[in-house]
Amino acid sequence: MNIHEYQAKGILREYGAPVPNGFPIFTADDTENAANALGGPVWVVKSQIHAGGRGKGKFKEASAGEMGGVRLARSVDDVKKYVNEMLGATLVTKQTGPAGKQVNRLYVEEGSEIAKEFYLSALVDRASGHIAFVVSTEGGMDIEEVAHATPEKIVTLTVDPATGVMPHHGRAVAKALGLKGDLAKQAEKLVGSLYAAFVGSDMEMLEINPLIVTKDDKLRCLDAKISFDSNALYRHPQLAELRDLSEEDDKEIEASKYDLAYIALDGTIGCMVNGAGLAMATLDIIKLYGEEPANFLDVGGGATEEKVTAAFKIITADPNVKGILVNIFGGIMKCDVIANGVIAAVKAVGLQVPLVVRLEGTNVEEGKRIINESGLDVLPADDLDDAAQKIVAAVKKGA
Image (cartoon, rainbow, N blue to C red):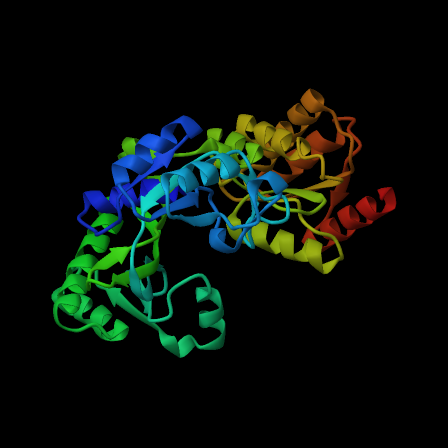
């Protein structure tokens, strides 16, 4: 689960990390009080969407002005002007795609005098089983280009979960960033705060970009991006309340109600698979034969008929879907359960596009019998290669 910058900074503040003061803006009426409370003389007005590259983004509406999604204001009137222009407008960045995202929230923050910009993040390093800190002296909006062109400028260090963060981790971060004296001490304290926040909130990723040194030699988290492990949110009901459904795809929201792993994509072939690895292989082979998948959907190893029915309905709700491939390998999941779920869903929503079903594993013969005797116009497949070729051919024939 992702959250907005202002929410992320609120969490970091609770753990003692240095962040600028600011106020979220939900309506234009909130603006003047927020700007006056911060006092100026410089304010920053930031679009709050779940996407990076806001500063270099462009609004679709001419009325939103030509400046990006992050703007510097030097008067309360400027703050009010920018809020009125940006709130409700559609911001397009390199991460939103051409459709962009509507800006429903803004964040007005006190300005900072920047002397240096750095990059600092924490994430779960699955190779080592540790939390890793990634740091670079090249902070700012082009960190992706730094990683591509000059990877030697990025330093990674891991924290053993048996010991937790230690003073030497803070010293290593300070050394990587070239910080000395009091700034090095601030870096050590910051690393401790970020690690505590990461572990205490069950984060998956924490990114501070940029981490700045102000002109009065203070470290400050100027931006913050956080994503949480959704499987751990039951331990943090206060964090679950931060979820902004307006930032998510409607189909993904519906899938989450049934504990389905669903991600919307831009293709034409809807996929329903059990197991993440098999799902990835299914997506790959669809692309190999010349079409694009419309989604990633893993119904899991213990899916019920209800979950399968819900998954099928979610796929067919996508107007871009021109064909559906069901690819199930029954281990814990039983093929007859999948078959009954597919039939129930088709009867409920109808079948307007080609459907290919490949079943293998537990109760496979029973599953095939159920499909064959259903009276549905379903193309059976013997294996994944056969299934992919059949659904691609069917979609291209109907194009």
